[in-house]
Image 1 (cartoon, rainbow, N blue to C red):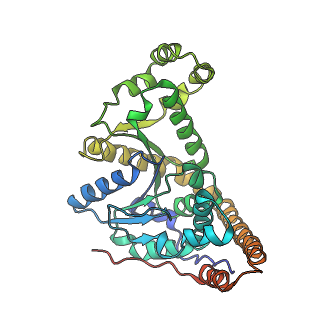
Image 2: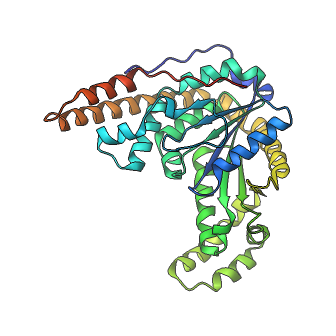
Length: 333
């Protein structure tokens, strides 16, 4: 399985102010991430913006929004799960890792479309750890960041943050995503049509109020959260957060303003860093791709040995499919 070479072309970082804005949508299962994707696609298109969508969740059954590039067209995660002897999360991760080895094809497609696009919205799996802590997530983030202004939106279910311990858990997740991606970051507190997010902003802005809420909890986890909340204060002070409703569209205007601010931060702070570090980032990305290829080869060998006593045509067909697949796109409207 060959790793594709990168077409050097012109330096995309030089044209970043004119590039389409890439927004990576990350969120736990049930947070309303895909619904918010749909809301933003409809809203931006109503403003005559050209929007391009990418789905990186191989396990999703139905998508509410029109998708231009869909991982499900190229990698069948159920077949991967079956033949590699994996569980659902392992199947999703392996499918995403395989897709990431061909991500240069996605960049080529976006490159042909870039001049006519305003936004590229990318939906990720609801299993956050699959994207955030796998090699594929880093490959995708690095590849996009050196090509386009790239932002991360972490979608949070506001109703699930009523308890301060759960809120802290979500914020620690947000902190880990920011640390891993190192990209401009927006937290979208979703479902404010169900419960307003004002109390969450108070907890982020007033350490004492969060402390009072935690003091009413008696579990060991609450004690741990209290000890960590002070350390999170600096994280909150530099964090963009907005309340939104994917269902009603409330707060979407604030989210758009946050995107503008995040793009400005990317241009001012991240582009100079990327210009200095792009060779190292690209080398790391290529090394990660090569490692995923080798990992696939090892897994394929194990799958073949495990099917020796059975008919192995399915395994051989899977090998053919994942070695030679090409990423295509659905026609834009």
